Amino acid sequence: MKMDEKKQPGVIFRGVFIKSLNFNLNEAKKQPKPLRYSFGANFEHAVSPDKKKMKATLTVNCMDGIKNPPFDLVVSIDGYFETAKEGNLSLKEYAKEMAPALLMPFVREIIANITSRIPYPPILLPPINIHALLMRQKRLK
Image (cartoon, rainbow, N blue to C red; front, side, top):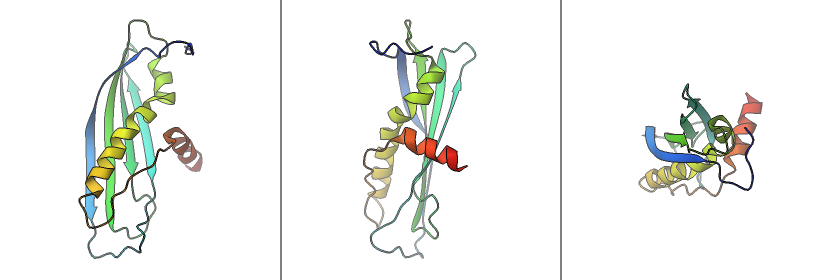
């Protein structure tokens, strides 16, 4: 189902929850200034058999590919979605195009919150084209 660009997608966002939060401060490791970080992201989704509900999972690794990082931080969140009565876009298409972008600000807030409580400058992520990041990572695999 292609979305009618003149209408809303017809998807209801029911909520977001932390699936997992893995943090480890590697105190013995010194990090050169400024702090270096590199993001890796993964997105998965599952649509119910009746195609009316979806769970979408966004996982972000803040130190992806960095050798001997000063800390490890991996955040994984689940977003829950349903189709509205007059859906304009299938949940599968919504997952492909919009769900990662909707979930990314929640991950950004968790990363900023956790890293503001450690002995390094907080990571304040700029706006990220999460769709482009996921596509680039998919090509590299």
